[in-house]
Structure formats: structure tokens, C-alpha cells
Length: 142
Image 1 (cartoon, rainbow, N blue to C red):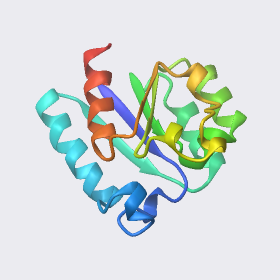
Image 2: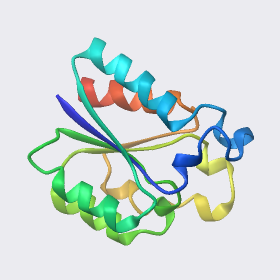
Image 3: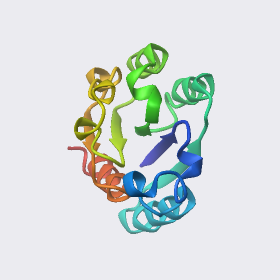
């Protein structure tokens, strides 16, 4: 099974950006944990990050027929990007939305996800564990 992990804007700053909200692990450290678990589960992982909305859209479109699942932490684009929503809906690859922090316990503008309606599910608020939970969900097919 091939799983594409996409990470949106500012996630390249993990470890130093607002650690009280996002923790002290870097994105590279989270990726290493995901890769380690993926090996045990027999999954192949492609892990990417971009601050550019269009780049994320391109990667989603390119995922069709290459990946069985997309896991996306769209970060701020979760709440603003119709383009990401349309790309996810358009390719038909099952997608899991994840967030490190509990977006529903934060500012009101973070409570609405534009991509949630076209995603298979949402995992939010478990810090780096959100990535591992999404990996488990992707592999199990649930």
C-alpha cells in the first residue's frame, strides 16, 4: 500500500513554532516515526511539505493511480482552500485529514474545515500521534 502524506504551510517550522500548541517535535522527526511504523505495517510512504497551495493541489492531482490513500495536514489551508477541497474530491483517492492541535478547541475560524466533507475522516488534537493514527487508519481501511 502506498500512502501520500501532505503537509501544508508553516509545518516546516514545527519544533520551534508555538511549541505549546504544536509540540517540540520537528516535521522530520514525525516523518521518521511514521516511516518506522510504516515499515512494520508493510506500507510505502511518500512524505511532503509545501507552503504553496498550488503545489499541494498538484500533488493531490498526481496521486491518482499512484497512491491508495492521502493523509493531509493542510494546516491553515484547511479553513480557506476550496482549491484543495476540489482537488481531493476530483481525484477520488481516499483522504484522511489530520491536525496536531484540537482545532475545535481553538479560535472559532479554525472550527470549520472546507476539506472535511470530502475526506474519509478527521484525526485532530493528538499531536504527532495524529500522524500515526492516520497511518493505522489508512492501512486498516477503516
